[in-house]
Image (cartoon, rainbow, N blue to C red; front, side, top):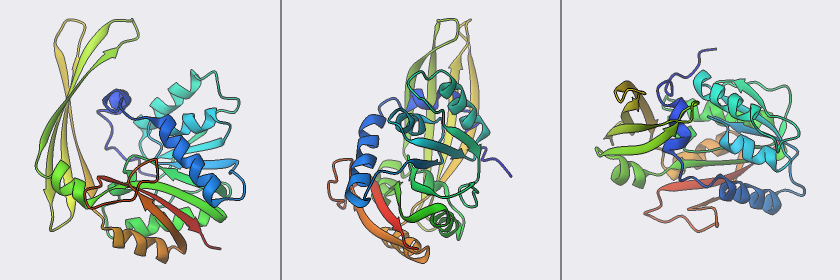
Length: 265
């Protein structure tokens, strides 16, 4: 299997650059969906495109038997190192290197979660269909698929051709602090619906100099109708889409959609 190499440069600092995310509130939303749409909460859950394992570990702490799958060896390495330091988890998650368009499991699961616009990275024709078909295949009958995606509004207005600088401090193994900067230049093409992110990461050395790493990532903008149609083709029942963890209705200026779908078997 070919690993996804889009996170080679930033895997080690990914969580620091996304420190504002509230995984506890996000997990609360998932559990609210479990209670709303399932007769009982699932025991076994797949966290698809799990990255550094933040959601995988959050759900594992709540007692779920977790599988974390990702296509990046670097991100999975971070997830496994974090899991090894956990003291609140009775059963450590199983982390596997898998392509989300053609992943394989040993059996079915009660729910699949997929966070942080991971599905927008499916940029090829038929990629979204392939992923949804895999999810359907490995879900229990009536099992839940909970995922989010960036909206067209976000691609047009927040991404566009805008540039951003992210700054943070990283505490090294020796306890010393170092500065990290991430320069982020966007290039969105509304004709192809593709947005390229040109990332430059600067990490400070002990002597005050900086090391630069560069990488390019690409996301695809999907319309709400395209997503619903892909779910239907995969024999997944669309249950709802919201603008936040509080089930607020999605509006024209919503930047991230939160979806719930059910496997019909």
